[in-house]
Length: 448
Image (cartoon, rainbow, N blue to C red; front, top):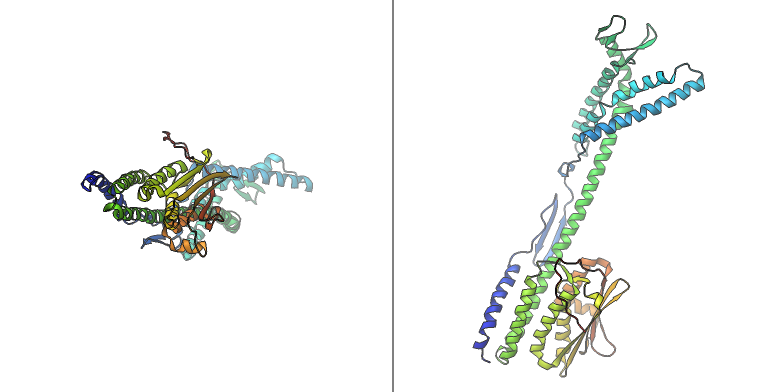
């Protein structure tokens, strides 16, 4: 086979290579800045800065339907009126008073339920103009004026009931705006002034102020929930951006290593180079089909790994043997996309390629106590020193471990060690989680 005969696969691979690399010419997408949180990706590293949340006014507004506010206000004051009625009536009974239950109820309902129409407006004002750190003078003055108006409104609303004010001349309760003797409307300014001055302090301190405090408590609770939600949302965005950066580092790393292997064989073994380019084209297609997903099934990742193994077999001919020992229930388990390939590549480069005889790689996946246990073993010479040194200097191993940390936190184990029988082993322990069923079932391959 001549070099010219390989032109077809080369052209096809070049087109796929152009599409593949176009995905990595663009800078990694960064989550949008969210209310003071900044995220930046620079030189392949994720730099996150958390400037903190901005003013509460930048948060999602605290809203509740007016009908609910009115219903809660009316229900609350009716309940308080009933409680006050029963308490005062029991007190009259104990002290020998002569007031009937109906009279006590009428008095208390007139006194307390007249707050019900005013409460929603006080609540709305507190939500609309809350007192905040660094901005309290203007809202405080506004609430003082509102409290005075609230007290006057209460006197007016109570005045339309039979218990508007206490008539000291006739020693009985009476309407404020209706003269029961002449049956005419009146506007007794002196009575209103006297009642207002007598009740303004109690109305503000015992009623208006608690309404304002409740409104502020609910508002601050809402804002704290919003901040917590946004912090969680930002954390997820940063994690996804970091994973994408690591993935973008890994895929070109694998590609350039493969192209280097092809170039080494191009002038010495054109047939092997042609097979490698064909397998590389398959790998590029599979990479373009992943749609940027971070997780895939173990079965799908094994398909990708099998295509990569074919490339290495074309390179080493009959000197490489890869054996798969996969438990069937593990095939649908979720794993990071393209995470087995760098482990096998590491076993080839630093393990089996050092042998003059046949190199063997053993990929094992087992389900153990709700964990997915994966081992990648080789029969190479092993390594000298600690496994941490290999993670520090090997891009593929380091990126794989960083991706596992970003996805699973402390719920994963990733380490490399020498095997007593010879060679090295990468040991992984991940949470076992089945992937959701797709609409169309992909063809599954069995690995033995």
